[in-house]
Length: 238
Image (tube, rainbow, N blue to C red; front, side):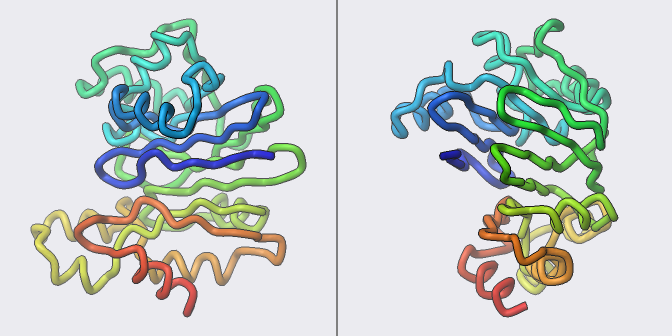
């Protein structure tokens, strides 16, 4: 059985882990190494269960510790060439990914690591590059799509194939517009290269998910402009 854990989701740090008794795949390492070690200890896991890392984009809340973990444990890191370039020049990543651990992904081209087949696809966000992932494992398709201000055909297609969907429900539109953010930040978050609202998330699932979808995980919720129960109710109603 494949297990899924979110160790962090949101502007404070993003890190997800898929694993079973044989292998483990981590998505993003945007939390501190000490925090990650604490989570692994609490779940009865060991860091050597991380066999591969895939990265969505080069913002600090997704890559803070990717270099340290990769370097210390000699773990391959898969990302597009542009994402790797962004990691290299991000001053928040103090330890860089070793050259022999860098693995380049091309969007739409599957890569097989163990029993995982990983395919990246482009999502619109204000980073050097940003991707979602279609992860196939023993006949199941898991789709992870976060940090996106708009929807494109690749996202629509991926969601239609998902057995399990991990998708951004970042903000409630009214809470964002009436909240404490500056006008500039409100425009950034709600823009085409920002983040997806609860309403848009619900619309996307309703329009593009198929009957095979078994479960949806809502992620990257804003602490200031959303609430888990509000996100769930809004999306369920749509």
